[in-house]
Length: 69
Image (tube, rainbow, N blue to C red):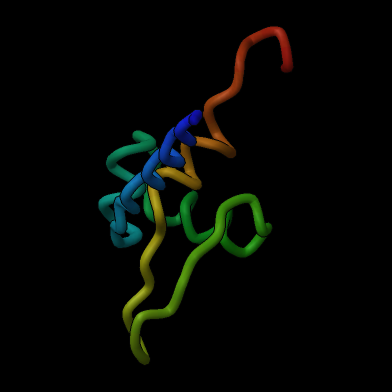
């Protein structure tokens, strides 16, 4: 009898605000807001004025090999 390997656990989300995301990317908060406006990164509203960004999604969008430039 063969056993199935369990599926890998999904990566935990790393939620951050706009300023924390800007610090992570080493850009201004205005740049992060523009990236959200341009749909380059996803942002989620967690309340009337609370915006959260998953750094895992930011990494997928912003980090790519030099050969793809």
